[in-house]
Amino acid sequence: MRPTLLLPSDLNAKDVLRKYIPVAALGKLDAGLPMDLLSELRPVTCIFVQLQLAAGTSSVHLSTVLKEASRVMLEILSPHKGHINKVLLCDKGCTFLCVLGLPGNKLPCESLHALQSALEIFNSCSTMLEERETMSVAVTRGTMFCGVTGHPLRHEYTVLGQKVNLAARMMVHYPGLVSCDAVTYAASRLPASYFKELPEREMKGLRQPGPVYQYVGVTEESIFGVGLTKKRSEYVPLLGRWRTPCSSEAQVLPLGNF
Image 1 (tube, one colour):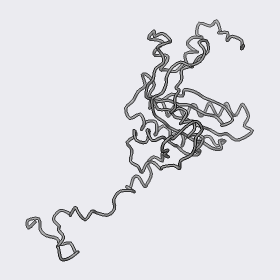
Image 2 (spheres, rainbow, N blue to C red; image 1 turned 90 degrees about the horizontal axis):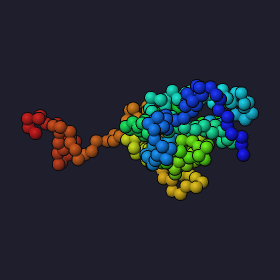
Image 3 (cartoon, rainbow, N blue to C red; image 1 turned 120 degrees about the vertical axis):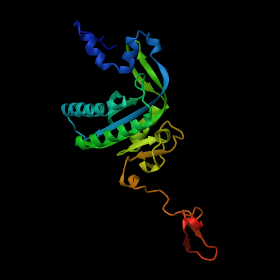
Image 4 (tube, rainbow, N blue to C red; image 1 turned 135 degrees about the vertical axis):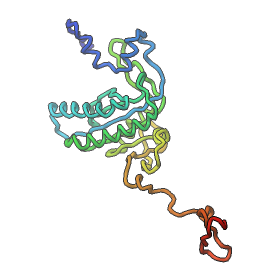
């Protein structure tokens, strides 16, 4: 067994350790709720961010990159009531799990906030972190387990569920862009020009994940209304005009003779 973590005798140790506990869990703990009541099923939105760093990156430089990326993400997520729940480092690079909609931090139009945050994180980190090779962001929404997991002496407050697994798979299978599932796409109520449907791909452990979309945000095409009907319907005449039965030319008449 690993040796027991010895806490310092400093009286301020509790205040220091509170910084590493999610705000959603702290609110319940401060209210005096027992540990068994910290867990629940609730609709939330998760954002998976992957930073694939260059091979041979030193540990010192890696620590600097993680610190800077975390700072940028927190600045973007805070106005949207989002939080970084977990940071993982493995063969897939550095992965951040961000969550919106935890207890006490629910906002209307959550999917819209999540997509906007994801795109800002993608653009900011892509510009700032020059050492990264590939960056991808995936957004999913659904009912997930939000609560305490792990051993009673070594537990954490996190989110679990099929939608979390889907976001992790999308992050890997759709690199270099911001992707989202069909639920997030529909709940955002944004025009279709803000998205591009991505090709279907097989994902490990998932059957029929549904359509996956790339969120491109506001572009020149969406501003100028690409995709709108360009040709006027012949069944709806303009005000003050009518079509003669013997000619295809439209005849303009005064409104008084209409």
